[in-house]
Length: 138
Image (cartoon, rainbow, N blue to C red; front, side, top):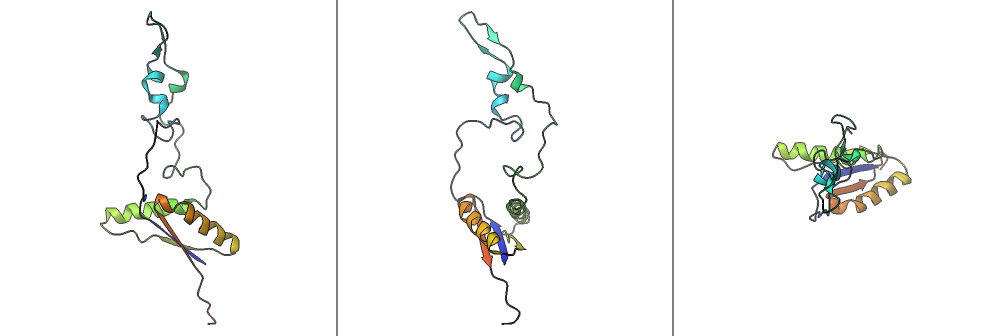
């Protein structure tokens, strides 16, 4: 079977409430980089404050994850979606429409996986199609 994944971008606006907790994913824009962690906060009317939180002591350069977010810790199979996003970004930079990526898989388990993942990620902008290989004897 041939699987094709095209990334067209999310089909609906994504509204995120709050901040990311893990600084590893969004340096300088995570919860541990908020003032309550980096500067402390008042604990009573005498303006006594807790100091900088131990959780805000991130060291730049530690914890780098290769890959596009939020897919850096996912399975190898899921990296195909990363490849589709990268292809779409390259196409956009070249002023073209994304053509997607294609790869071959075998077996019904693969077909089930890619069919279901395509349905699960459709609202995230992924278009997944599965085609049977052409039978050389037909």
